[in-house]
Image 1: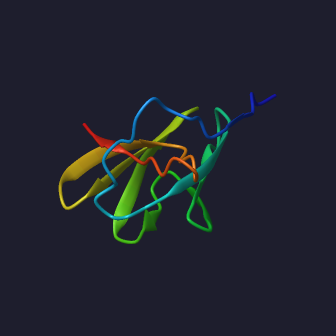
Image 2: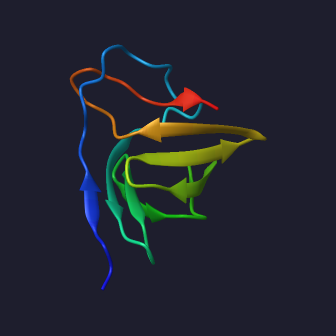
Length: 88
């Protein structure tokens, strides 16, 4: 059986840099065999491309992106705090 966990938005201590592509990670549904993330309004999986950024990896609490040779990691965004990803 797959271990499914849903990452929820956190309220971090301070804001982080916005993602280079302006992507918003709304949620993560993690399973060992088929992790998925909600980016904006799209349900995506590893290898998909969203707004020109490739999804490299979906972890329990973060999504790793690559665009134009640059990689970064984003947590699920807290809409009230407006936080997004930090570069690697």
